[in-house]
Image (cartoon, rainbow, N blue to C red; front, side, top):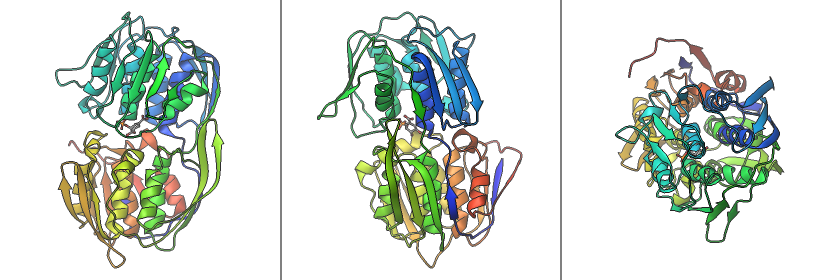
Length: 444
Ligand code: S3P
């Protein structure tokens, strides 16, 4: 699939973007492992969360989908999963493979987890190491990449694990394995990362503590009780429109029911630091997660030095933020973001290449990027950009066209389906001049 964008436009109106991807994954996992029936609304029907759903069905869990965004999970309890009949294919989804590796390490059956070419190129040593320390039998290929082979019937024991990198996936993997471990499992992280696993475990009645020193702990053996989950709109999907409305003159947009968990709001903090006009209204808590409506209007942004503490809070939003930085007045500097190199693509390289194609001055760093914004008087040039099959790269270059001087084509945009089904229709309704064609896949 390919996006074609005409230059210009404004972003106006009201929208609710699809459900949060991280929370949707966790709702299937914890719902399946609980006792009773869990009802989920606002579920993200994107390929990634659906891969998790299919995986649990393949392990014997009855999961109904009565209406769009609604999922009913008939939990089988912590020890009720059955061996899948073959390898579990998790497509493009890093969250599925890393979180599931933790809970599958505690089962009494063997399993193999695999995925697409992008997923099979991503590092899994970060989950293999702590799981082996807990007594799991898990390995990847020679380079520590998928497929992951997990042997069942291993007695896991709790450990203290100091995460070497700020990763919610690794933290969650260890905590989920901890449900099956003897004794206490504790985790510390070098910087705060998204805490949906901890919040949702508490919602299912499993006490997870976090002390003043930031030590997160749980004890093995607690049973989970089914609950009701309302998934907020995904701030990571909202991010494209927060940036779009900020950079396109005359824009005025309202986004409703957006998740504003403090561990996810780096994009709001950074855009505001750049001078964005963003108002957050009607803050409320729904099912243990804070949500709000957000109004964003166009404004002239200025470059910033990205504060290190904001990096994990905005980790998925940097591709969109780089588009904002290109439109800003002055220089934006990001350092300490080496994790961006091991996402669905190398997001520093992919964004730098596309920005340069569109005429933006950038300097690539090992762990970040320096972007010289073209400011109020400037614009992106036209061109053909490769998204490297990365959903967030494709959507970022789509919104760049709002400040383009000529058309932009984005190659290999199929994976937008992983996190944001209906992106093009929603974006078109709000004013982005986007059309979609089914181009022959490039073979990069
Ligand atoms: C996620 C954690 C983050 C994020 C990913 C979703 C999660 O990954 O990039 O999109 O749901 O836990 P890392 O843990 O690798 O930072």
